[in-house]
Length: 155
Image (cartoon, rainbow, N blue to C red; front, side, top):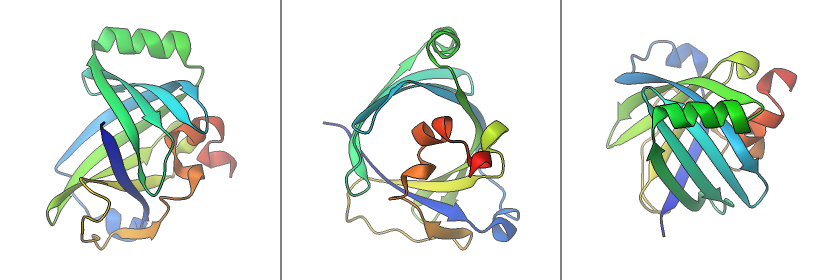
């Protein structure tokens, strides 16, 4: 079974503003379904489309199935099945032995920037970059599925 093991952090804006990402991609995503036990997400990232099914989180890990689909189908699904979207830019930054994914949100979630690291095991060690701040992995407000329902601008 494919598991996602991910830790999510807020960033230190003053230090993050000095970072030059290795790569950045525009992201648009929406949710066909989002419940406390599972979600079905549709996403465009750059020139690719994806459908992702995620299970309930437990200790920073959860089941995750992700499939690449044609971009045109992802765009059609977003327009047809998703009433609200998450718009963000995903920046990739290498630090130590890991690639950090830093999401800079736009639209109703503008002003929010979070850094994520995906691990291959729950006990894998990693080094925090100096621009990483508070661990918000357990704070469900920061999940994209919740940011669709209660955007950062409304907090």
